Length: 216
Image (tube, rainbow, N blue to C red; front, side):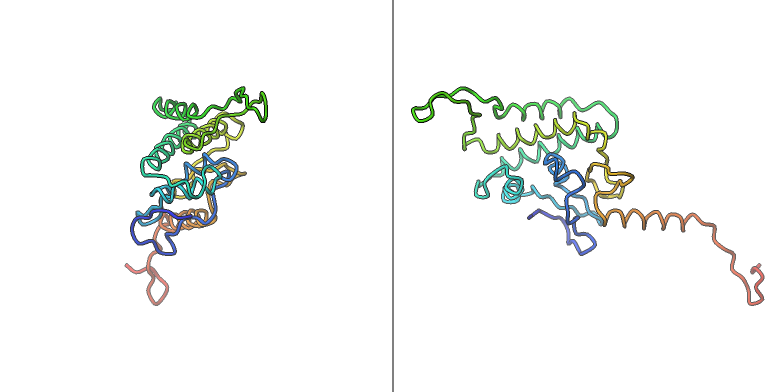
């Protein structure tokens, strides 16, 4: 999946290869994790350009691959991402959610009708169907992601939401057991940082002379 990166990212700065735990179950969690902070002050944004945003939506079956998203559409998707991240952060930290984020997600929820309305046609007669005009691809994608975010934040998995415990990573995940890392790479980095901190905290051993006695 293409993304927009800053700086010259080397192998150690590459983003995690797989979605964070829970992101495959909840597209809204994958949306929240679609701008990844990397070591060295770099980051990669999978919604950074209209083409990248189109690819991301297509990969999640939320838009055709040839939808031809414009920058205004990509900007709306990035805006919803920030609001979903704010709601997840508030849930993780046990804080009240920002009113602006609530309003934005609720607005996205109403972008597309979920009710199956009554219709009539000569071919089918009376039937029920949800409206899904092809001219409102982005509205339906935003509504689907907002609905998924509401399901995540109000369901039993909300208690498992946590932030990756390996700075500078900014991804969220669903905790599994004691694991607080979004990827093996982040886990390795966190363990290495703890080992370095333990070594740095040890008192320096005095230097000894040739006869084994401490130097004066």
